[in-house]
Amino acid sequence: MSSSNTEPAITSYAKAPAKTITAGGTTFAYRELGPKGGIPVVFFVHLAATLDNWDPRIVDAIAKTRHVITFDQRGVGASSGTVPGTMEEAADDAYTFITALGFDKIDIFSFSMGGMIAQDLIVKHPDLVRKLVLTGTGPRGGKGIDKVVGVTYWDMLRAAVTRSDPKEFLFFNRDKTGKQAGKAFVERLEERTVDRDKPITVKALRTQLKAIQRYGRSARSDLSKITQPTLIANGDNDRMVPSVLSEDLHQRITGSELIIYPNSGHGGIFQYWEKFAPVAAKFLTP
Image 1: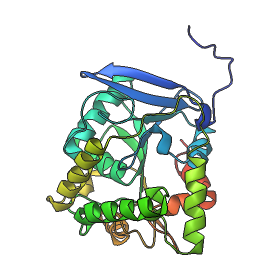
Image 2: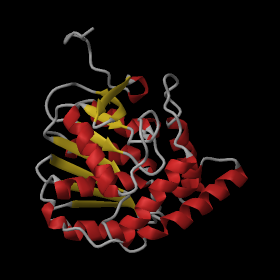
Image 3: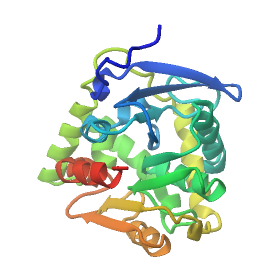
């Protein structure tokens, strides 16, 4: 049954319907919200993340005026298949998904590993993307990216000991402010109560970690191919993807904007969502 154009657009990520589309032998799980029409904003998610890992405060701010699409990568959450072993393969999967939905032009909002995949996608398909948001991420061959495996396993252990979510350690500083921000972020991720996604498997997480390690140890990409307006943001103390790599991206992507939030880590945009969400929404205004 097709929805009537008179129905108001869903602008709450907690209420976005779960959908699937099959392309290239993979059934991709996705959610969409916001007013339809025009160029959509496709969200590229982080390591170990499913559809339930996007901060609703950021998604909802953008979905007020834009058609937003989030999706599970192959082998993650409710998407079928096995997790790709490289970022290039993940970028190819993203291209398959986007074109299956019928789009030949998109904006991208990416975080962490999602930003790595987004860069590979643009290098291969420079005309696909109109505007680009890169947060908590770094370039192919970026110094220190390959340390992510050790950092992740260590923080997962610390989280297990304290019975908390690993993201509280991986994304936020362990001072009073960071701890509060981490708990608030994890609570926001629980706001959706129906039709939640399946968590990532341990095997899939390990595959993703190896892919990030490979990305960190490989030759640099030619980022001069990224000529579209680009917004880069991070915290000043990112332990997962060193903050200096955001500066590196800024230097290599001509005309890009850079925001570094103080006293914050990998999840700086989530700690400072009240400042960042309107900035991102404005940047992504057509």
